[in-house]
Each structure stands twice: as C-alpha cells, then as structure tokens.
Length: 373
Image (tube, rainbow, N blue to C red):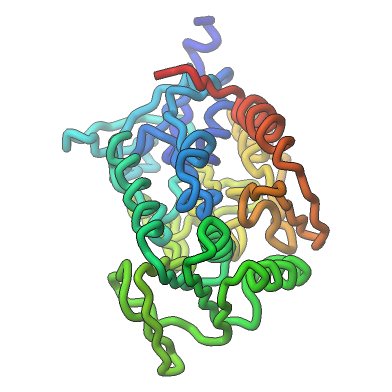
C-alpha cells in the first residue's frame, strides 16, 4: 500500500445497496473506505416481478455477495446496523451481529441506508442463508397461490402483476391502484403502454379506489378499500410505496418531517460539512430519485473536491419523469422507458450476453467474480 493510501482520509458509507456499492468502488483508490451493511449481499430492490417468478435467474444478477465485487476488494466491509451518528466527533456507533457495539470514526460520511418498503426491503441484520430462505419463501408463496392481489400501481406493482401472470396464465391476477392509470410519475406514454400490456396479458385492472393499508399487512385474505368495497385473494402483495427511511440513527436536525435526510443538490446534507446522502433515504426531490440517474458520480466528484480543499462543483437535477426498466427482461427482450416517453427495446440475447455481464457487472460495478465461493 502506498504512503498516500496509508495517510488517506476515511469515508464511511452506511448502506451497501446498489448506490452504496457504486460510491464505494469509486472512492476506494483515493480514500480509506469502510462500508457498514446489515447484509453480506447486495440484495437489489430492482426487478421485483422477476424475483418472484424466476428466482434462479434473479439470484444470479440481483443477489450478489459483496465479497464478489472486485471494486470492493479494498473496502473494509462491516456487517452491522448503524445506531447513532455523532457529527461533532465524526463517529458512528454500530451494533454488530453478536449484539456488541463498536465505534467507527470518519472524515466524511455517506448516508446510503435506503428505506423499508413492502416485503422486499428492510434494515434487519441477516445472514446469507437467511436472505436465501426469505427469497425462496416469497417465491413459493406466489407459486402456490391461484388468486393474487397486487395492491399499488407503481413500478413494483406493475412488474409483479405482469410477470406473475405471464409466468402462469392460469393464475387470476388483479392489480389495484388509486388513480386512472398505473405508474404515476412516469411519462403518460409509459402509463398508457402498460395499461394495454397488462390488459392484454390477462391482468385485471381495478382503478380509482384506494386500499386501506393495515398496520400489519396480511399475506392473504381480505383487502378493504376506502369506497367500502372489499376483495379477497390467496396471496396479497402490498406495493403501495409507503417507504420508511432508514435514518433513525441520525440527529433529528438532519431529517425532514418524514424522516428523510435533508439533502442539497450537491448531495451534501444540510447543516453539515462532512456528511453526504444519496438514494432513497435522501430528500433530493419528492421521488428520492438520486438512487438512479447516475447521481453517484456527482457525490464521488464532490467528496473528492471537498477532501482536496476545493469547492464542490456538480449538482444533482432530477429528471421530470421516472425512467428505465419497469418489468425487467421478458422473453422478447427488455423495454426501457426514457423520461421523454420514448421506448427502447433491447433483444433478450443482448440483455443476457452484453448488457448484464458487460455493461452492468463489468463496467458499472467494476467487475463481479462469479467463480467465488
């Protein structure tokens, strides 16, 4: 290790999901990087419908042990849950899996701890086996059900409904959402496109009625709606978008009224010179869209400049509409929706042989060792 690296400043990243991994892999050559994560794997929140209907494929591309990322080989990864940040002392107190506490000091801190959302995102400490068991249980529950209710018309709801119906057309799948069309926040052409795709696939669409979400959401049974109507299903997927930010370990003055981290367009946290935030936990915009849109490059640039005593000079500007993949790769390829409303179709061969192994794993994630144990 070079003298420059031995004397490098320390960046602590809380959260090694998609965004945390991207940030860590691009800072590690210049800084000492410590990643704090509740799970030993990157368990992506993307392509939820494929996760439930084609788990072997999804595991390969979206459930990756962190030790397999070549860009993280020099990152110190600590499996723990953040309990408290002391911004004056520049330290983080964490709870380790054995129940003991540890203090980690930083020069710069990156908050990338994400949110809890539905059944597929949480901040509990889990082993690799516990992760696999939970993934399998979710997929098995859907496979065993004949009637499935998907509550919520966002991208996760649309992805689940379409993939489940296409995987087994004998299942009765109903998508419930409160607006006129699904996919609020996407360009109107994307909304209209999936309204037709879902209908053509045999998904029943129930619009303009909001489900009453209980404090503990059941896996099956009855759903009640604000109109007074009700529905029953053997399996219920709650994809209503009620995200809970993983920010309870931060001082309240750094949080907005909903618990998201108050984040400037430079991705610096308001009221701090040494803390940055990115992803679903950061209140950059109503959609918390810095989890996408290449925002990690802005954060990396600004940390490097600040560490060098230079003013930050890049700013995050959210797009007017959400964009990207909505339902994941299908038999006939992958459809990407741009924020302008334009659609781009990639063949399945291109997705499986170029996009995922080369563009995503090798270029974006800086290499993934698929031979590692």
